[in-house]
Image 1: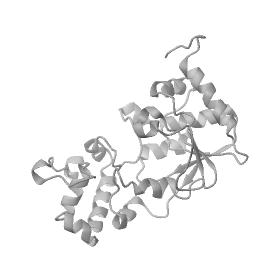
Image 2: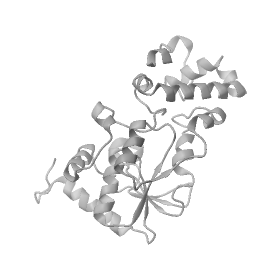
Image 3: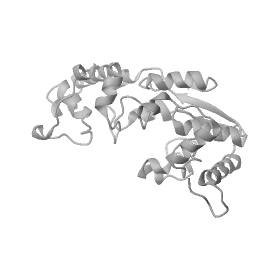
Length: 260
């Protein structure tokens, strides 16, 4: 951990800045804290507590959340309010198709639409996570709905987040101890290790594949582009979301026989 000129750690400085942000922008009705159960949102919730600001924490369930995460939230953060969608992810896949890197309808459907309307929403986003997040400001308006986003951990590093966990004695989901660097949705277009995820949560992937077959069967556009439901699934599973790969360039197929 780096030290500043006055001998303080970078974490101490950033924690003071974070608390100052939270106090400066605190709305009369309190913050809407978007809680995911990940290390960053756990740290964010603790910062809000230390700042002494009013907030209500909400967990937007997607129905494809790792069971380890949902159990962790139930056990460690019973005060968090659960936002449960009217329909599961797989039912929506049947009509909307599979989400992609450039068409992430799942995020809008489960985590954005109708969440925290007309309020200031606290997010545990950090610039270190991606170039896109690095471009976001700490305080920014939502372009689609009447609400604002405040990301007070934006300039924190992963090392500082874990140091804060240790300093405050904060709990974390067991998946981190097993080597998972991200613990978001199981079936995600950005999942870097599909094989490992399929092996760990095969039912989630099987249900998604079945839903994708329903979508293919009723979509003329999908049928004109992919010869059958299996070809459509294999195209998606190998992350060729933006364009179809020629047959001779496609990697070996993945099946649930390999995952079980």
